[in-house]
Amino acid sequence: MSMPTTRRVVTGIDANGKSTIIDDQVLTPANPLDPEGNPPTGVIPGFTNIAKTDGIPAKAQTPFVDYHGKKIGLVDRSGVFCRIVDFPAVGDALDDVNFMHLTHSLDFGVVLKGSIKLVLDNGDETIMNEGDVCVQRATNHAWKNVSKENCRMLFTLVPAEPPKNETTGEVLQPTDTAHLKE
Image (cartoon, rainbow, N blue to C red):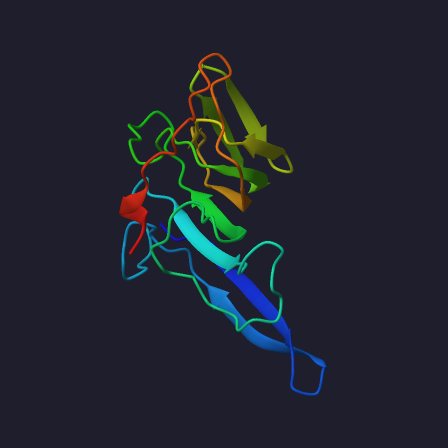
């Protein structure tokens, strides 16, 4: 199944202090589990890694590093990450790829196309539609595309302090996503 591409235009400042386009290319969604960045198959979502900052606040004039097609974790403590995720329609099919996970990040998830179910570990669920925005505040969650059409979301992930269980004071540990890193 073919997923839509994304055109990414990156700007910078040249040696004379003038704004310039330093990168302009069309990106094809990649399998986040594949070290070669091949397209996903089946229920595996497609990741289009747009950019990652080098620190917070961002150092806007450092050399641009292209993370597209690379195996990287869901979030990186060293900077803000922006990616597009294409979730294939799975309907009632078994989906053990889009698992419940917790990251130490504040995520802004915008539904660009289609609809998707947000599932929380306490059993809360809600359907999000095109134009809806989720402010994901370091909670344990999963995304399930139970519709008949693909869903495209834009995510911006900002590193955050680890959440704590208010009752016990225990720090909630992030989900191990080492399988996503090179």
